[in-house]
Length: 152
Image 1 (cartoon, rainbow, N blue to C red):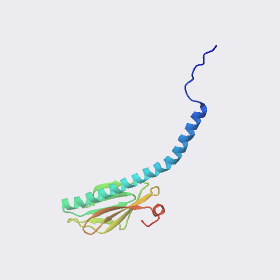
Image 2 (cartoon, rainbow, N blue to C red):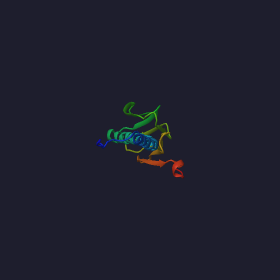
Image 3 (cartoon, rainbow, N blue to C red):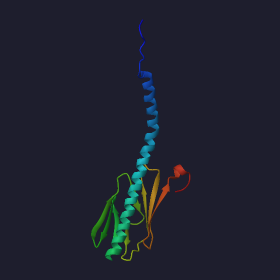
Image 4 (cartoon, one colour):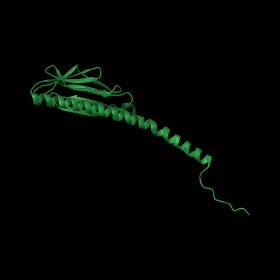
């Protein structure tokens, strides 16, 4: 008589079921992950732009000389006395649109009132960076109206 030996492992059908389940989970997770990356890229660009503005204000107060921040084709420059002191390139997937051509921080820290809308076509939200007359710099996250059902 032949002794029956116990086989270990898994069948091809079991393997196919696992592969199909992994494909279904991946098809659900990848779009969410892609939007997560776009949102983080947008937030990072907005934070860097806000940091540039804070540094420009600090330079104006420290050196007792006005600093002007301008945007040209996605590159933001902070210049003092005609020389660039700081520069920031915004990623190509991110758009930063100022409400004025330039923003000047005076030697006492005051500034012109400007709003900068930071957005990306792939992200589900936008950011607004606002400078007020006393030189206060604020950043606000605005949810997408298509997802939240309201206005940003």
